[in-house]
Image (cartoon, rainbow, N blue to C red; front, side, top):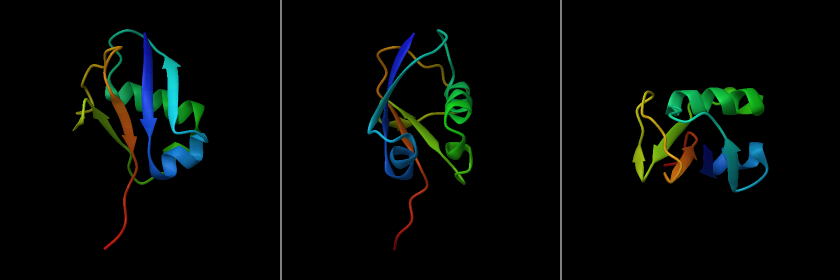
Length: 80
């Protein structure tokens, strides 16, 4: 299945673009997606945390992803 992923903050800087399109196995989980992205972009694995949001809600690690889902990677945010 083909997933379109929006990237924010340092995740966007690491990948070098604001969106990413990847081909992955049907029924991939949020955790599985992160594992694939860590393999493709090792600098993502160095982040203290990286949340996956699906359809505007934070996704549990075992949440299944679907081709038409709106997916975003949200890195740690600092500020005051």
